[in-house]
Image (cartoon, rainbow, N blue to C red; front, side):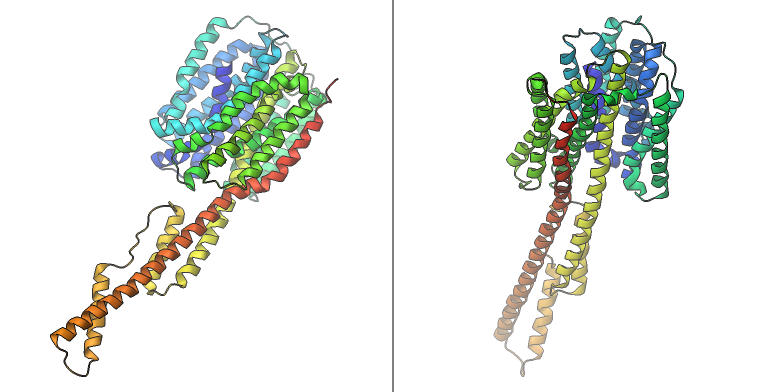
Length: 548
């Protein structure tokens, strides 16, 4: 069960860091390539609950095996995809498998153990979810660096086969099936509701937040949300029993799941992009730099789950969000070139999220049993996906907006600095073009330190020497000619040397300014988010007080 959950959640974030490599090999735009990401998110989020309800009727073990097979087929297709269409097809099949595997892994895993060990199992499954989401960029970076981008999909194959073998030999395929009525309208509305929401979040930036398509999706989302609530209230066998939200532990968990995943993924997805695009580190270096986050999640999740009964849910959730807030504050104030400080900040973030991730799945399960337990885990899984989607939508939109502003400011600065140079117009144009070109490529790339050719310098010397000779009142001697030439050569070379230094100083100023602008484009995301993260600490009040 843990293997399946790990693979499902891993594939929500593993692709992000490999996007440049996939884009270069398949020769596609980033907008088109984003559909390989979005198809997984949309289908996973919108079909998780309907498919888990279907599994209750047809048999959870049977549908679980179907889910594993679909995930295996999808991973295989994605792993050999020669073009974008095949990759999107593979990811779509993968997501259908994940929509079955994720909720059923939770439900089957909980149902096969005793009540006494239930909390430990739920905690283990919850920890696996958090680890997978955090490890995605790291694993993606390492695999892309050493084995190519296809490996981020094909690596699923042996683990899925192993899971298939284990499940075929251990699962009970004769378990009782649900005889409850069907909530076809609720299922249909739920799919439309979640599909429209994830489309808004994933396509808002590329389509435009004020575009007719997004406005229509907003209208559909609001309308279906209202209809869905009404339908579920009167349904005899609702797809999402609204009674779940009368439980304070579940409601608090639902909010905390969204918020904690939103602020975690905002770092694990955005920070590797900063390392690779601004600091121009390799995918492997970027992956290793955020690995401390994963390490602390692995350590703190089980510890906080153990401390849940002793400290209470309020104290645990509050301390987790406070630590995440501290990490965001540090990201806006530390020197991001200082690896030690970056790692220290990542450790704090991982500790904070780990403290939340351990107990949150246990709290979401509350004391539910039967169909309520299945529903609670399905909803928790969808909310986790909503948190991830929100992070990608909000932070990538903010990032692209900030980068656009940074580029605009940098171009204005380039024009200002180049215009102040005392060099010929064609030389200014060349420097301006090269500087603007570097904004789109590597700001830290080496630029020539000598900007004038030997031929130009020689021609200038000869021209200046000729002027000096013709200005003399009488014919100079050979010795005088030699002296005049050497003096002219020295003066011209000194002028060009000063111009070179002036140009190099200007280029350095431009690079430093552009680097600051682009760094601030990333850092400002966390600066703006910090008040919202601090406000998230109040979610602890949704949980009931600890019984003394």
